Image 1 (cartoon, rainbow, N blue to C red):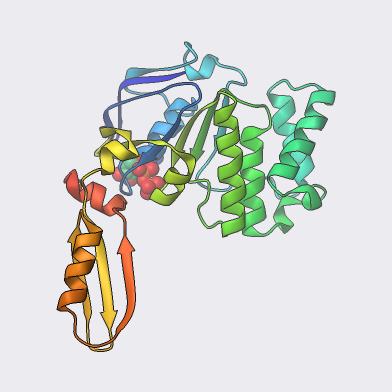
Image 2: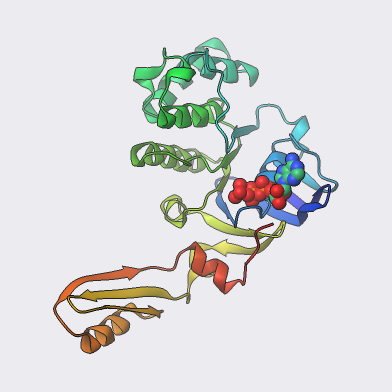
Length: 277
Ligand SMILES: Nc1ncnc2c1ncn2[C@@H]1O[C@H](COP(=O)(O)OP(=O)(O)OP(=O)(O)O)[C@@H](O)[C@H]1O
């Protein structure tokens, strides 16, 4: 569904993309992760047709992004709503731009408003919405025409847990219906919830690609034991054994025990990713 091969892009002195390749199949959610400045947004902008690569090719459903019509839905990193327009007017506008007819548009708005918990706000102007409501509206504009490719650039930034869950549920549902999804985030827990595959970007290219099991297997998590006397912690791939050892070593009364699974920082460390441009 999405095929990007060897993309490069230079902004003056900054090599934002340096041979960025990524393929995402229909029905697949690909979690695109990486440090700030790794090139994720530049890539998303290129796939959405906003930016042309210096070299390399992008195909969406077999054609270049600027030639697709209605195949792509984009939820940009920064909220970009028209303050005087209501939520319903936004959804009508984006739906019409993608060629949705009046009847289909009406039922899509109803279904999406329910899924995104926007039913009570449809007639409210965007400028008067809370941050979370704006996030949900922004995401809804990307989803209204049921695109074959969904580009979601940190869609949950600043969202409360309820907004985050609504968003994750809709993304899962759309992938279940066959949409390909590129989902950039700094939260591994979201990717686990989405059962997403992972692509790690660094210095303008994808340096690791696979399922989270493939990429995280064997990475150490951490066990912490806090007692009335001291706090003990150990990095480990065998939490049960480490916990028993720490309990045997610890002095004082145990107050808390914490097991932390490997996270994105552990993954970056294992890949020796250290870049911030
Ligand atoms: N319009 C621009 N002009 C000059 N440099 C840019 C421009 N856009 C991005 N860059 C640079 O290109 C590099 C990649 O930026 P990009 O926004 O793609 O990273 P990112 O992985 O999305 O980061 P973040 O996680 O912070 O959103 C950075 O060094 C950034 O400063």
